[in-house]
Image (tube, rainbow, N blue to C red):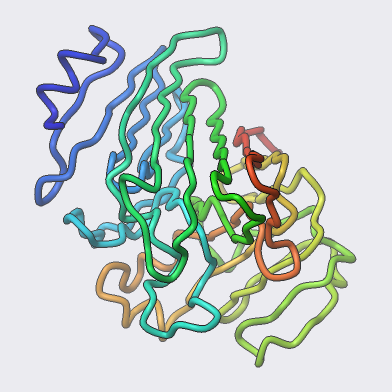
Length: 301
């Protein structure tokens, strides 16, 4: 559907409109009590959440490419049904097929929590030889004082299926070298920058000083990004998600990435809710799994 068709079916005067981004991608634009949110239908990818009177919370690279079939750098890419490279097929796309798939907007609802948009993706919409299982996914994004995201996956096969998933959230920060992630102390993580070695988080804050790509296992439901220079704490609460990924490419890789570059890499950190590696989802036939996250902002002195 083009922006005009979506506006005619789902638009709400002064609150929800639709526009074209980049090279033909369609996005929903939400305005509510001073808050602004955006989500691109390709990948059902959130690309903006600016709470009323506050700095942007979601990071978007100034060099992001908005083109059909191309992954968008920033926002909240939806990772499914595998995380990172496919375990056996090197030719499979990184992070699965959902993040560049054409999700369908199926509903809009106003409530006390804000404005909710629901998207759907199913086996009939897109399938993959690398994961040929029949499925249906529903994804609801609620823009309000908090940003809430909920991904439900139904297994429509006659046998159990195994998959990985993540809400690959890019957060805007004052300076990557001056922030820390709390809530992960004592947890085991897989260090992807050090030969997939398993380590234990010893310090109360995860402080980044170099390229970091760490997959934390069996993590708590609440974590936070402490950003004293901006005087705020970004709180990330989740359910149905056992893994947390902390990522930043740092100087050399960040500068070399055409859709990121220098100094953009300094203003972001990924703290991702998901189920990957040991925490992969094993879903029985005719069953459903839901993973959700809520993001809010608190002031700190």
